[in-house]
Length: 172
Image (cartoon, rainbow, N blue to C red):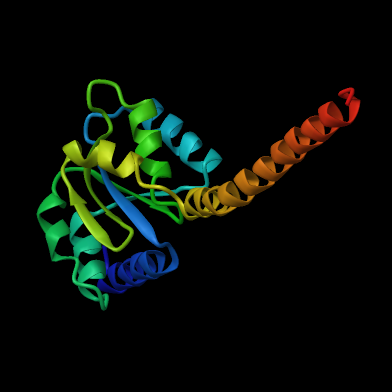
């Protein structure tokens, strides 16, 4: 490969890292072509960009970034695919869903501005809440007290109405 081609690929990878908020390094060494194609289809359905890269080129792309990605450098061995996404937990859930006997295996991930190294981090990554999930929880928490107050007022009104009705119907 010519030096110009390598520098072009390095720049493209650096642009992808800047474009997407999160990325996963996945070991696809033991996968067949059919399995890789199936993984690509699943990634496409879930808006994940999958790129199989040369480790040295990815290493140089990460070095050129403003963020220190040095915790990920030791993971750049074997055949590596990078899964780029904007929702932190989607690739982890996808890997859990499609993996058989640890294939494809998680090498590392950069999600929510943190590093997760090792396949044992897959459960942690899949439990990360997305921005929309956090917003939904906050809205539900904010609505809860208002619903309780309205419910108490409605039930109290019914109780008060019942007491007044009973008192009004009672013979004196």
